Image (cartoon, rainbow, N blue to C red; front, side, top):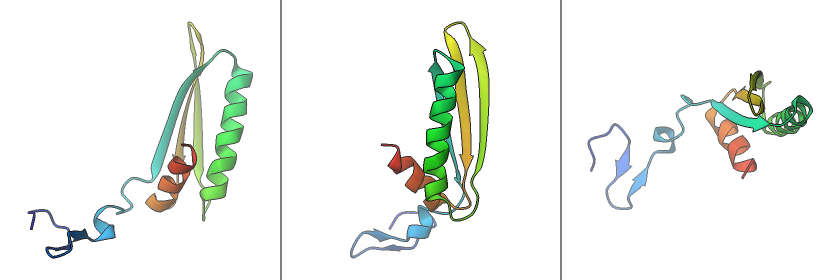
Length: 94
């Protein structure tokens, strides 16, 4: 058995799910450079809709726009009430 604090079973190489999903990482981040603010706004709306579909309690969505030489950078933090929702949202974007 390893020296971590996870509840492992040596026979089946199993590990407690609580060791992996422990609700310490509930924020998903997104960053992309767009040619125009309108394009960034469209993406923000689409991602917000996906976040709302994954949430059980309201997801905190914090967008930040930064003007750069090549366009507008959109950075977004999506903070969910639990890590499982964060993972569902992230997997839905793939």
